[in-house]
Amino acid sequence: MGFLLKWLVMAISVMVAAYVIPGVTLSGFFAALWVALFLGFINVLIKPILIFITLPINILTLGLFTFVINALLILLVSSVIKGFQVSGFWIAMLFSIVLSIVNYLLSHLLGAR
Image (cartoon, rainbow, N blue to C red):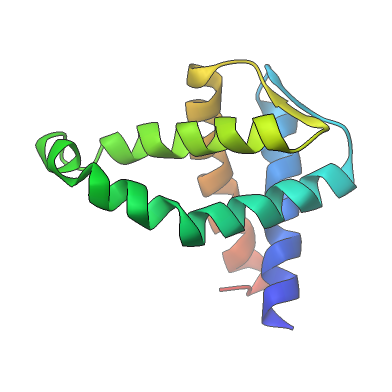
């Protein structure tokens, strides 16, 4: 039950972030479900490898390079999932920040920690 609740919270967060940020288009709730699923899959499998590979630059930037990695992963998801489009790198970075904030707030409100 915990996985399904987290997945739904993430999908709702994707919808809210896409609504708030101009330059991000989402075709509907099912696209948001696929974005949430694929983003979770990428965050578990690919993101740790990218952070390890870019560890020296991440240390030099005091962890701020992680924002760049998140934006690149959002662009990857945008290129794979139909019905989800991000217009550019800076929009993807803003989307990842807003998505993190909205997901954190919804997770704490709904108890899906």
